[in-house]
Length: 114
Length: 115
Image (cartoon, rainbow over all chains, first blue to last red; front, side, top):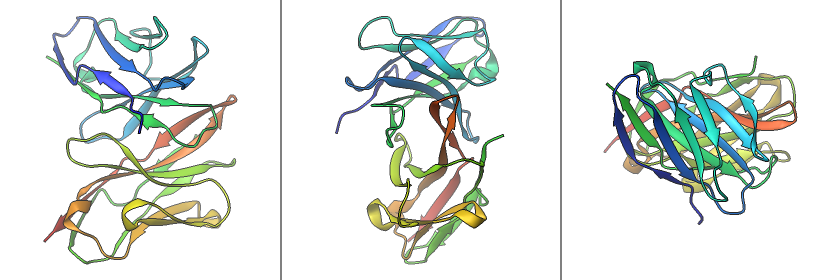
């Protein structure tokens, strides 16, 4: 089965530093998402991306966050100035179409902000 | 606002016991419903889904779920659990917003199955 790939699997950073989390969605998918899961809490929607622009974002996705599809394969999440509360598992996901039933998740990047 | 509630945060069972995990959602429109599982150290995997038709849906690994529209519920069941079912289970609703789709997750239920 095709997979969504995320790198790195674990990233440690200092508060105030910029981080970029990388994702390679499945090649024929058109809709891309970032979710996060703070330890012990539920999985939260961050942002959805289609046709090279953000289609929806949550309240969590403030000006410190940005997403980009720099080429035909990668989909990145950037946090400009990390805070302690950004520590979480970040999941990338993709879907073939907007109504496709199955959302494919990556294995996640554990971000630890010290 | 759209939301998903999972009633049990932690469930502990012995092998062969029956399982039922509750899930209720709050959304007035047409919904697609999912259960995902996350085994320790692994990524989320789709267990089963409901889009339309028979409200009793069967998924992988012997799991099933029943959509009861009048109760806004989509409870997950398994008649006899195994130790390997130890995982966290997430109910999710696919809601439309502004023409786009997103998944809204419940807080999750941690299931521990003892041999």
